Image (cartoon, rainbow, N blue to C red; front, side, top):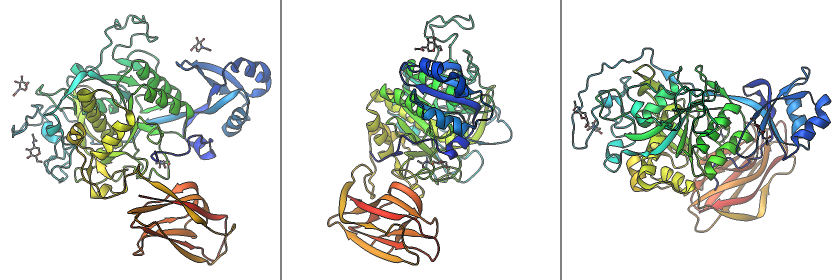
Amino acid sequence: MLLGLSTLALVHTAAAIEAPHVPGEIIVKFKSGKERSFFANNFASSGVAKDRSIKLSTGNLSVLKVTDKSASMTEMLEKLNNDPAVEYAEPNFIYSIDPVFSSSSKIKEVMESPFAAMGLETPNDTMFDKLWGLNNTGSNDPKGTAGVEGSDINALKAWEITKGSRDVVIAVIDTGIDYNHPDLKDNLWVNHGEIPANGIDDDGNGYVDDVYGYNFALDKGDPKDGNGHGTHCAGTIGAVHNNELGVAGVMADVKIMAIKFLTDSGSGSLEHAVKSIDYATQMNVDLMSNSWGGGGYSQSLFDAIKRASDKGIVFTAAAGNSGTNNDTSASYPANYAVPNVISVAATTSKNTLASFSQYGKRTVHIAAPGQNILSSVPNAKYDVFSGTSMATPHVSGAIGLLLAKEGRMDLEVLRDRVMYTGVPVAALKGKTVTGSRLDAYNLLTDTRPERTGPNPTLWTTHTLDQAFESNHPYENGKSITKRFTVPGAKFIRVRFAKYELESGYDYVRIADTAGNTIEKVTGTGENYVTDYVEGDTVEMNFVSDRSKTMWGYEVREIEWQ
Ligand SMILES: *[C@@H]1O[C@H](CO)[C@@H](O)[C@H](O)[C@H]1NC(C)=O
Ligand SMILES: *[C@@H]1O[C@H](CO)[C@@H](O)[C@H](O)[C@H]1NC(C)=O
Ligand SMILES: *[C@@H]1O[C@H](CO)[C@@H](O)[C@H](O)[C@H]1NC(C)=O
Ligand SMILES: *[C@H]1O[C@H](CO)[C@@H](O)[C@H](O)[C@H]1NC(C)=O
């Protein structure tokens, strides 16, 4: 698969360490049986001390504290990562809810209910007619923005097939959930093996009083949401239908588990994220919905997601809200190349990519409604939020419907189905793998709209008889053009083995036969694949200006289909 990051064994770069982390804390995985000897041999000189363990099914991680106040985090990490007893060491990163843009005042249960049951059966929740993400009438954006009719997830048609099942368990890993919310209460997962608030782990699963889920931020049973973000996400997935109240979720029937690792201020540590994912994996949920991100690459987070993937559990993740291209600057956990990760961008009621949404034609799998989304917030209230955080639960809910209908399936098959049953949208071309918006009906029926672009999984590699490469270093003031043809190819793209070019000034332009520029490759990178040109011929044009030369570039392969 070409999706996702190709390099998994990233080293921690200085940039990654600059990502927010708990000061002075390092998470270490020791090689099997080596922890004791590490401390026995190095303790005096190591500059770190063990503070606590993270107990995992696959062997503990250790949280160390830096005791040598003169040592920098970077130095300590480097030292630990070079120690033969250590498998890896990384900062205890801090993640946060993707910043959301909320309306100023909370909406109480006051909206009128002018819905008319037309053709398709519609729930009688009073604010249903404001849920443009489920059914966009062109005039039901709650902020009054004029929308585009039909640019929704096609929920009404999907509900003719299934409205979900109480056998499907979805964990919302977030700021917790207001489990007393009247619009959510009946669709929450409840651990009947646990007697509430008796301080005893009644069901013996290792967690005390985990009735609705667990609060890893405060290491206690109660996952109450003092922020609103988690409750909002939960409402989009599964607010109760036909209760003449508030909103309706993508699923009418579901069990939502509340897992809190983000504090009420909206941030949480890698340690608590890993514990949350492991808890959900242990409880064998069907899907984890993750509207948060940040940090740098973390092996322990990757491993936790991989353990969930190995058990067949879906992991949806918000692509992020910094409006950047995720193919060139990764956001985690959305960018982990694990089969269960489905990375989600946000669309508007106008059927465009939301301005804040991150995107990536290789790394973002699908887009879904994420701007001006009305849903539940604590204390029986409702509010309008925007973010890829809001898009993600639409995808989680739609996959929940699919799981209700067909049960668990191979994760790559499922992810392909989400991507290829999506509706192609002009504004999303090149922004997600298939340039599409989620369509729940198509997903359930496996209806795949026709597409004109290449199939991301069908590329064939063609090794060039002679590599297209510069001298190393290259010369100033050059312009070299070469064309390569693969007879019969409909699409061609170029794989750069390596490039080091003065960023912005020296570049290799990729163009089609008509001379249209597809992409300019500049700066530095390795094993990089360009966007595709249409037709059987690709043109590469190396241009250098009059100053500064660097290593250059090397292309040995092009890919075609
Ligand atoms: C893992 O950590 C737990 C405490 O969190 C501890 O009880 C257990 O002995 C540790 N296991 C190993 C193999 O070190
Ligand atoms: C759903 O949207 C369509 C327009 O696409 C509209 O005609 C219909 O009334 C809407 N249904 C509900 C229940 O809002
Ligand atoms: C709303 O739907 C429920 C379930 O179908 C039904 O019991 C209730 O009477 C409906 N309320 C209204 C006002 O139609
Ligand atoms: C996604 O966006 C983030 C934030 O800008 C960026 O750091 C990350 O590299 C992007 N993902 C990929 C795979 O490039």
